Image (cartoon, rainbow, N blue to C red; front, side, top):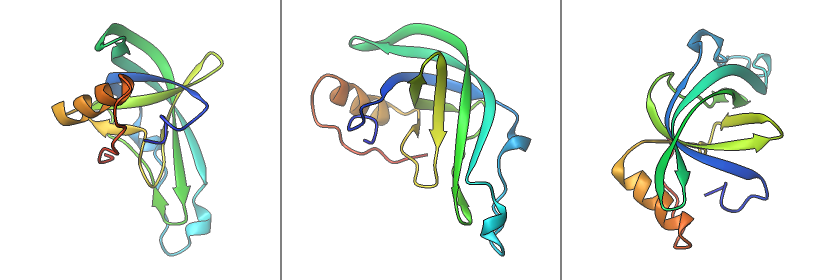
Length: 131
């Protein structure tokens, strides 16, 4: 997982990110240079924070969804869908990155939670399938 290998500080949260989906960038496959490489969207993150060995700490806080585009390919998540997020702490700002290759938001399944908990406890950090 990218977050496990990073020097950045991440909060791992199982929950929902709510935002205005009309603000998601639209890829222009015929002229990919017309798509902004980074779009920042205000959002509200709610769910349970990974604390110690379990997802137990309730959270409900503002966040920023950063959607990255590489040519005609853009990342994204569905507003209100259940995910396990690796939210980067940047000062007082909580940032969820959605890049074209995935890696920071995963469907909230028992398998994804098992992999996250295993890695968090010092075990193997297997790559989970991105959303």
